[in-house]
Amino acid sequence: MNFNINKLTDKLRNMRDLSDAELAALIDAQDCDYLHKTADAVRRERYGIDVYTRGLIEFTNYCKNNCYYCGLRKDNTSLERYRLTKEQILECVHTGYTLGFRTWVLQGGEDMYYSDEYICEIVSALKAAHPDCAVTLSIGEKSYESYEAYRRAGADRYLLRHETADDTHYRSLHPDSMQSENRRRCLQDLKRLGYQVGSGFMVGSPHQTLENLVADLRFLQELDPDMIGIGPFLPHADTPFGGEEKGSLSRCLNLIAILRLMFPYALIPATTALGTIHPLGREMGLKAGANVVMPNLSPKGVRELYTLYDNKICTGEEAAECRSCLDKRVKGVGYRLVADIGNVKR
Image 1 (cartoon, rainbow, N blue to C red):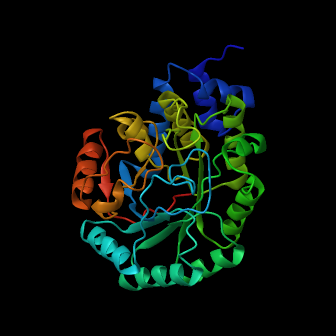
Image 2: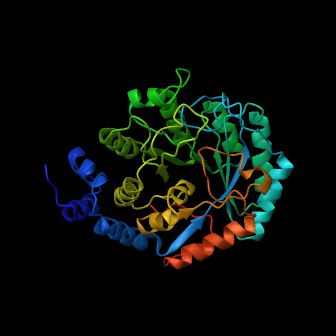
């Protein structure tokens, strides 16, 4: 069936929904300038030209899981592992604060070294030092009780990509010890506890179909998250998927635009993976409707060790260099970085 992409774009803008076949056509469309410009217009209506910064601190590259696509997987014995102490994390935060950051993303593998008590101690110390800031955690699947403890300690937001909403596809990306039902349970627990919740998925992961991507959009409609992070699949040589093809940049950009039209209020990052797959990927993401960037505040000495995928950008820069570089890039395409915690504008 042939669809008029511009008409589908207008319909999605007005209705915030399409049929499965229409969504698939829009995801796979080739001439999408109108789609991207329409999405950009919608984000400007809601957020103007503001782009929110999230100071990313990758505090551990240990992980108990063996996801087939991830360079941090437990069985990757060629990776040099590291952990940051509470003091090192707070030093990263202090550096970021002086550079204008007001939101922090503490991200790591599922590392059991960091007990719930230790995570709470870190979050509490961060909030005590900077009560005007927001703390985001991205540390994987936990129990309801753990999420509740982090929330009491002061965590405001939690990022947990669902990765794929199709159970069969999920099983093709993860070992049997991981279940998509548990990932969904975690996301619902986070919603119940009052977190601002972020989810999302990879684009172009092995065995993924257009139908899988439509299912991802349907899942997000059910979840109604505050933040939605997507990025292209990028292979890592030391994983079972090391020889697979990269995800499609054009599909990624189309999906960012589609997400902006379906969820006008959402915080949608132009990810590092976009900048890795194309030198101007993050700028393209912003022009397609994204409104968040996440500069790396991790100590320079460990950045190249947090290798989710190969050839990750910005591993050799100091925090100030990252911030300055992004500021110029964002201004170069007509937007501005803002020092704001960046709350969702529903």
